[in-house]
Image (tube, rainbow, N blue to C red; front, side, top):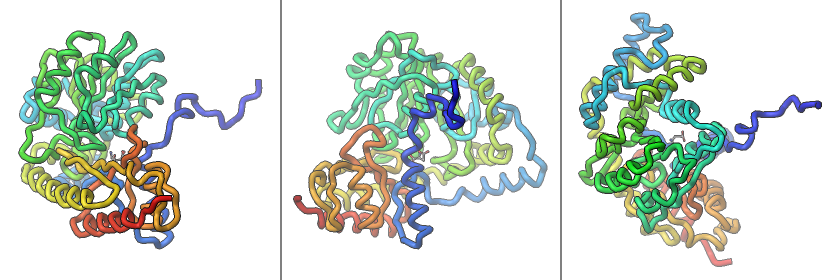
Length: 406
Ligand code: GLU
């Protein structure tokens, strides 16, 4: 049989490109055309990586740390990661119980690719980060999306989890603070989920804690394996330096979990990218071992911006926004704009239309809620300076004022 030379792997062919990158690319294209766009779409801190971390990277280059590292990471970084999990999360972790990858995304990919087979299901509470279902799809398995709407503060309840777990469930993905809603699971909520999970010993849990340090109003952060240590033997607790230390471009993610799983992830990574960038790993050691004032400072900045933004959005006709408890995203309900027409003449039938019209008419870039599994919303990242944030929110408000019935 003749085969088309362009035939793709069927799992890849059925996957979607990253929705966040799609919007970011659209912004870059507009800017190249000379259009000025206020971008509230990218999920990355606008701060520079702290100086002592940059200096550690330069020192690593100057002293010749420019070669391959061990696949699962430098011993010094794995020790720092173990210490972080012990000190900040109360987990019992040795350096051998850790794994370092080129970003959090690779940690997730490694873990799922190492364990999923065709009939397996991954429970993903929605709204979810855009890449979870696509990674599951790339691994040839199925996502079991569990809608968790505003009525449940966008969080998975124990009842909903119990209902979703079936004979094919292999993983549950939990993300707190959440991208895109900023929802944070309390200790009690995690405890309730843990009771259900204890009844199902075949289920693995991925705790994506990448926004751990961005948590507001004096709340405390908890992760599942800390709340229920009996689940530690089947929980992969994942984190990284990207969001906490403004190091998105350095690409360092890490995790702790059961050794059999970490070994499988190492085997996979050894045939794929090898160890993460040696220079970035040295920088990550400096981040984890260095002064921590940056964490508090950036938390305060984001909390201030959150207050500014939520105030402005809730003063905007057609938008409604719950107060996010963490991360740097607001997830605003835009359903009241749908079925109407923008001042520029675009009929707004979906959140995608709202996003496109905001880009064309208000010159503000945000991401449609449907990309995160909940239509009728827009995700607005407040990882820009206060002045730009204010200008963008005012532009959104003006846009919404101009929306009329058909
Ligand atoms: N996680 C960030 C976001 O949601 C960065 C882009 C991505 O990898 O999705 O915007």
